[in-house]
Amino acid sequence: VSISLPLRNRTAEGQLGHALVEGRRIVTQREQLEQLIQVEVRNALQSLTTAEARLRSAAVARADAEQQYESEKRKLDAGQSTVFLVLERQTALATARGNELRAQTDLNKAIAELQRATGNSLTANNVTVQVR
Image 1: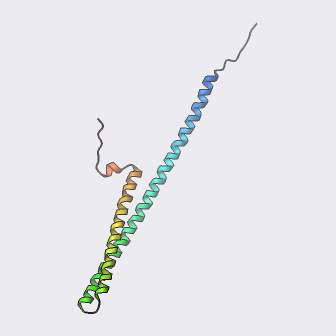
Image 2: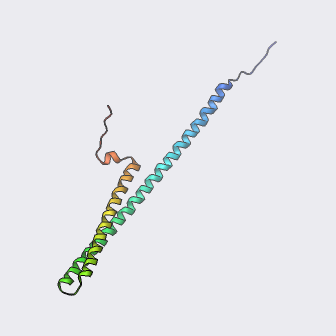
Image 3: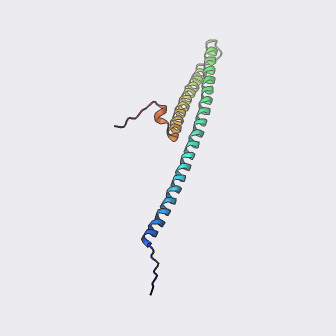
C-alpha cells in the first residue's frame, strides 16, 4: 500500500507572496519618490528662471527711475520743475530700489531651493561634513 500526500509548505508560500508584494510596493514607492524629485527640480529651475527675469526687469526699472530722478533734479535746478515732482521721482526711485532688492532676494531663494532640490547645498557653499 502506497499513500502519496502532497506536502506543501503553506507558511513558506505565504511568506514568499508577502515578500513579492512588499518588493512591488518598494519599487512603486521608489518610482514615486523619483518622480517627486524630478518635479521639485523642474519647479526649482522654473523659479530660478523667473527670478532671474524679474531681477533683470527690476534693474532696468531702477535704472530708469534713477535717470528720471536725476533729470527732474536738473529741471528743478533750471527752474523748470517743482519740489513736488522731484520728491515723486525720488519716491519712485526708492520703490524701484526696494523692488530690485526684493527680486535679488527672491533669486537667492530660488538658487538655494534649486541647490536643495538637487542635493548640492553643502557643496555649493563649501561645507564639508566629517563623521566621527
